[in-house]
Image 1 (cartoon, rainbow, N blue to C red):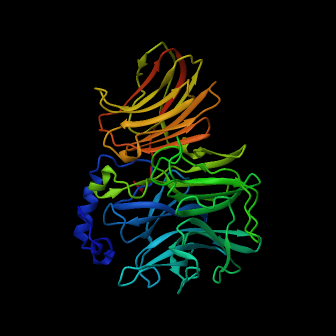
Image 2: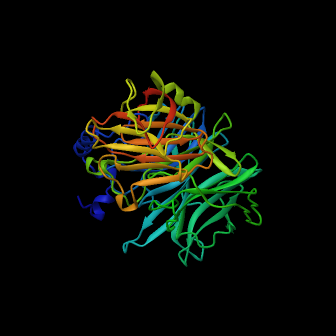
Image 3: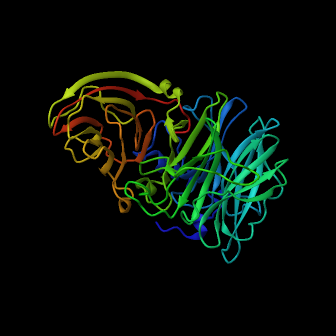
Length: 500
């Protein structure tokens, strides 16, 4: 279905209840609905926003177009959780109903202050000639969950020297001042991040560009985030327009980070090391972080990408969010691990221990399914290649393969035969290099239409949407050209979440 501009920008109050009911039924019948991931009831979900711990609970908003699996008139939708695994639907949070956000409530962030959760976001506006204007806007939520917008934008204008690609404010407080960084594009079509400050969250002053050594690194930097971790400064952003370099930058757009000294908010200097991708899989973008009441730095990302078609599009919905990840810093690299709360989803444990002989492939009783966690430790390997096949079909026509190749020291995720195709124009394999091959631990979360792989305690992560048949539930362990021993433990995963 080709969507017209009028269809993409219809207001919710203009939609007949019967149309929404039919869409909800269509989505409910999708065979690829997730079970422990945040996903939209209908329509399209994309960037996570306003990720916060407030009033004793986790709060998360996401960009949402409710009427179909296209990028249309964006709202913020609100979910909350006591434990990061069971999420409640709170409903539409911010609607595009003012003259400063009339054509979309775009991405932003949250910050608790004086008992309120302040929400800073980009208001998107189009004129009669469809020219775009970006405003940075503010709202706040009280402890009863009521949200009220400021009467006017807090940053009404785009600074001189930058295009209308000016969005995604990320808030934080440092000493007695508030700061916000905003993704931007210079008029020469290079990406950059701008820093603003405020003493009261109302009046904002532009400081200028954060000074990195990446002068030409893509044409736009989206969804910036700055935080401090283990005494170092981390600048996280999603650059668009990078060319592939070997195993790097193979998706349409990337998300990653710089590690360096603490950002000097006065001089804007940020001394840093190389850019690292946050995820080595296929479907990861626009991540956002926050600190919770336990002092943990948590990250969640959009499990999807712009400008890519997904098999669920024709079923009236698209995308989900990743599971949350706890961040640590080790030797200049961020380690990402599932939060400990995910243990509470585990049911029905199965453990196995075996040594596969040369060119052997085996499956095991109880190791299969559509929604599970699997931890696999490989050891004593002399095989040329070894690995796992997930979501396998009875006739081997479907499989998602995780393989390790000892000669190249590369771990590869292959979704060539994972089911309905996704983004094949950008390739069907993703790889990373593991220098220490003495031991390999894979912690894998499989949901109905996704897989997230945490390698060696989060040294690398691979995220991918997959769309196999419902009957493709097998798991196989294999070797080629030698032997490999392994221990594996599997749990079914079951959430009480009301968001899925």
